[in-house]
Image (tube, rainbow, N blue to C red; front, side, top):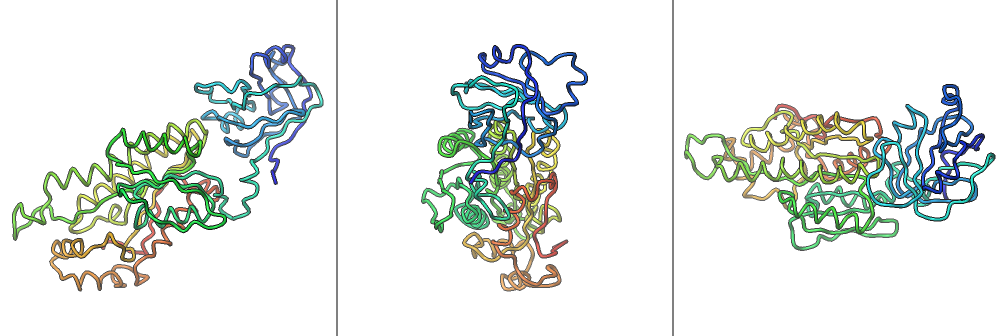
Length: 403
């Protein structure tokens, strides 16, 4: 069933409301206080019983005036700010293309009845959202997860599906990964994507919008790690010393990919007037890591990007947060070759390296983290329950520091 989150009654009409509606727009004043400073209503204005609409207006919600209902198809970038600070909103009825003014909501193109004093005004949450009784409220959202064919990314994508969200799984793997799709799951779309190539990113964004119509959440998870020393005294310029090729490969995926996927997604979130970007950093990005300096550098860069974008995008109702996992349970990504390389850079054996994964000297909880624990953290941060968490990176590492 649907849920009304704002309802009021028209108490006064501007002199030329009918003419302006014929031209496909109308200004609704949400505060009686505004009328005190106006000798008369602006021609296109409708004044109603005064209180503020403070809940978020989203694409897919219903705007109803009198007996007519219209589905909201586009939301200006600062609608909520406009409502709360200025107390008015412009409703566009033409269903046309193009960017909206910051305080505008565009509804589907359909006949508009005459509006008169006494008509009710409603904003109604979509049935799919209202029907989601889960605490997180992710049902019906659309999330993009990069690097989601395996590891943390796959666990995050599965968690979104389990919570009823639609998920676009992006990865370089040409073989589509298998997910547990069950009753109540969201839909999954797999798009082979190279996050270092802008045309590949653009194709993924287009496929997402064509399939689901919008993007609510981005999890920038794609990343690589190639353990190497800055300089190897045993074997200068050898196998385990950082080369230009290794440097550029890691930086390209871990920073360039994060940057340009976020840029492409943000353009779509502007159209919605809301969104959440979650960037996957690492505990090593916060603390540094022996034998993984380039990886740690890029993950520190992800932390900085998250803080910077939070300052840029908060005004557009787009939250940006980071997650920094520590040592995770073994997956197919933790290969013997990876462990041998990391052990070499630290002057220890592979067995010693593995013992360190459960050492309370470095991880107070004394165990590796579970992929589902990172995924659960992402679910919370992506939800409106975390609506005031912004511009920070959350360490999910069992208390691990300086390791």
